[in-house]
Length: 227
Image (cartoon, rainbow, N blue to C red):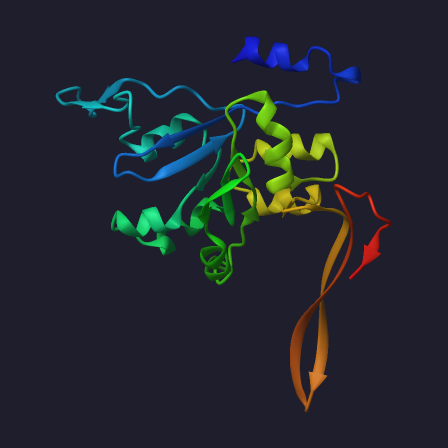
């Protein structure tokens, strides 16, 4: 991994580049996951119970069988489920995933959509612990990067903020918000502000959310527009 990072950093002027480690894997019941962050480690081949009397296979070359043990080994790094329909088919419940904090509304293979999780993301907004939204695009060669970025990407306000957000543990939302983290299928969001504003409607107090957004197209670089 260090050799790969070294090759990526060479030729980037001023070092204005950050390669965050990540891994995609299948868990013991068949769910596909993404982990990312500098604390990621390769899964161990096996482990024993508390007194060493029973040995369990962790990595069999196809699956990481014990998800909980693996995310602990990776210091509870950033994580997200790739396909919620797969989760349902495997007999699990989406409510049990809320504490993982990251949502991937759309999952791509290069520029081809392979999982649409938007409805699950909207359902997850009911959870009061909040979550960070991210993109996931599977690429296999350097030549795929441009097409992948054109399909969907995650943006942040600057490189230091991005590095902090990508290496969070249990505080995804708290670091995503100051980093200006967002996911887009095209426009670059240059500024985003959300504010809860109290309103009095018919004698009843209510709270509504107002927002302002300034963005431009990645392809045309049009003048910023406000919504």
